[in-house]
Length: 273
Image (tube, rainbow, N blue to C red):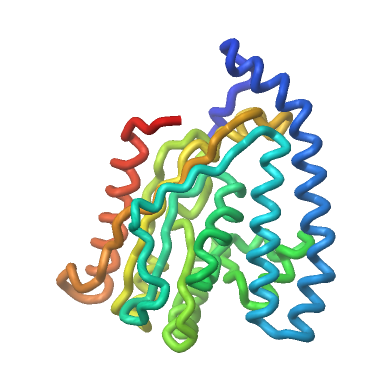
């Protein structure tokens, strides 16, 4: 699939964003790189001395620092929960957060915002090696690696994750499209992973999150990042398993379709900048 990203600015606003982006992008990249490098030894030491939970607290703080690096490029994060975030103190249902995926910049704000729910991130296996701080988090269990070209491995990994969260009380954060959108258009929400999770935790609360404008940061393949983009995250009403009939597979498919429909409808609504 060819990338739809623009090769050059096509309007005065884009031209200004392109010019200012050449100033802000080096600062952003420097800040991002320094953050993962500085946190890497800190996170390793915190895991060895304090264990998994202390390490995860460090991961969440690092992700806050990572998304705040976007400030160097004039970017902002806009959150709108509409009081749709479930009560983190409620133990009645396992929370599964699903979001559309537009860029790697989707992940740090979500990990920080959802930190109270102790989310386990499901991510592509390519990030499990060679990236300071991030790759080590795979080894400690903070991230579950999915091989996108190996469906069997993905299903087994999700099944094991279901067994884990059934006893740990953690939540899950993942992107059911399976890949990033290059133009902001919503892809199909695949239900296979949810089906595996629900074998162990049938009473789940599926929480859709609509991500907007994050894809624009790759408009020029990071050379430069557009200046002044506002990334928008909207938490939508929960979808509860008890509202659906059928077996586990039927429920998972219906719930994921409902989540896709909710995100699709939301991203087509007009929003204030």
